Length: 227
Ligand SMILES: [Zn+2]
Picture 1: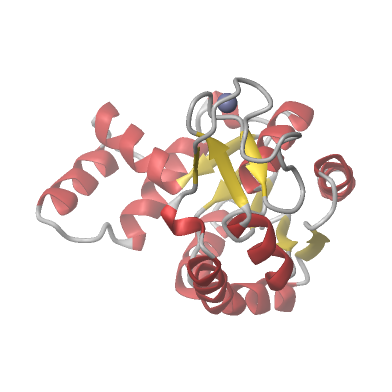
Picture 2: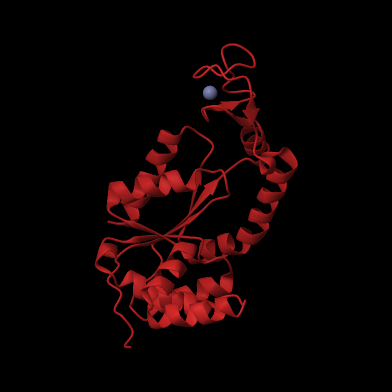
């Protein structure tokens, strides 16, 4: 099969740790700018299901219990970006994860006379993130969300919505796990941040404010680079 022609004018990368609201913000950008969010996991599943050449290659590798190579992921990405729904641009989520992958992506785009428009880093304060995430819990009856500091039930120990008196916490939302997730994120992302900073396409945005404010900032950044 011939290499598909990419017609995607805007290529954005969204970097942010778990819990920074990346998914919410990506959906906002999809709606506002007609972009399509491409996440590596979904792309692989789709390509395997569609039985494309790259999808078949990925399937064989995964069935053998191996990791899908960057080359295959790039081929899948190339095929996907050639689809008509990507005509306005894409937001990459989960790829690249390493500078080797970032270089492979640059090569793919360069073959189409393109570049990354922006790598947007959602910046968080770790201590604050730990407080936010580790304080979350939900009603065991109706699933209503609460927080130790920011949203307690009006009557202690009783759900505002359904009156249930039992609550649940996710085991992996404890402070230690959240802190180590953040540390792993920073370790993994630091080289990429440096890479895109070096290219002059890095944009940092404060992801600790209200969702609407973060969305406004992102809208400004994306609006600018898509012009
Ligand atoms: Zn409830």
